[in-house]
Image (cartoon, rainbow, N blue to C red; front, side):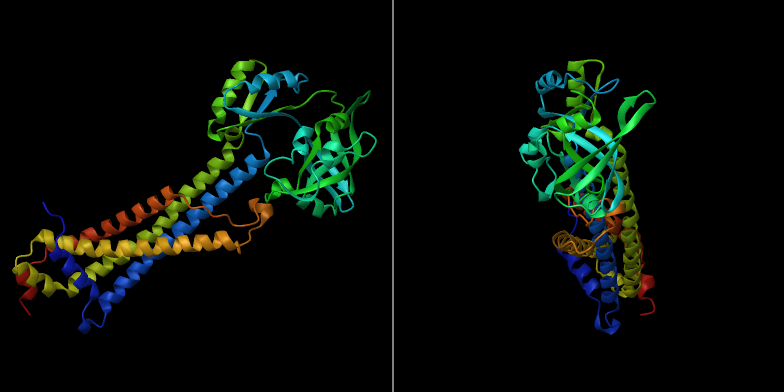
Length: 414
């Protein structure tokens, strides 16, 4: 059984072109409806691309600095971290294991006072070029691994913190830890002077304005921890299997050890971002829905102005099904052309935004300083499918009305 033939296609295209005596009215309304669909699709492409890019960039920044899995011990830190690390490395899927120390501190410099996080990591990481995901702006990572016991320890700070406190490589700053040392009257904060050995940039304001790195031996000395560390940072070969690897590690080590993978730690953030993406898709689909009303109006006007032509076609033997197909084809044509133009313009605009990054966003609010864009094929396919379905549905009722037209009534007064 045929669905569309040459006859239906030829008539549909003739109807879309309009005629001279109508002064291009139908053609103009067709172009306006097409532009409405194109605008809606373009907006969807750009917004979904930005939302996807923001999510992926956040994930990249977070995983570039933080471990895939944090292994901790109930009751606090532990001293046998080297033996524990050897056991963890035998777990399938584990690629790198390093000890770490984590504490909240206050820092003061020439430019004032600020809070931050001090992280102690293995000196071997500094000797190998520093933590992944950090771009060195000034100094040398090896300074943090090679400082001698007789001089002020070198630490690395973010470029935003350096700007806030008016610091540069070689500058000195005071670090205040609330943990401090125990006395007869309780814990007293520990204060020590450090020099800036490196200044890094991540592109994520939260890290650049409050994150600092120090070698584990110097941090243990500063906090009086002896050989104790906070826990182990574990990198895995497949980041999306990190939850399974974390369970395997805990199973191997047993109580009182427990592990948290990056999906668990940052789950609220990524769930919120995904929810925003879905909501924006639904809201912006309404633009296409509004354009679909324009398509329905165009087809209704076409039916009214082509009443005589439809009657002639039906008297010549055109079936109701053929008339329905003609107007469905008209609506589908508008939807297809509008969707194609919208996809093309949306992808072009996304490439321009991605290449030139001329739109800046408040980095202290959105964490990132530029507008990231990333297009996924599944998102594009979903937008195309949604646009075509809406435009076809909008064409059904006008097509049905055209098929119901009585040819005798239509040409009675002609």
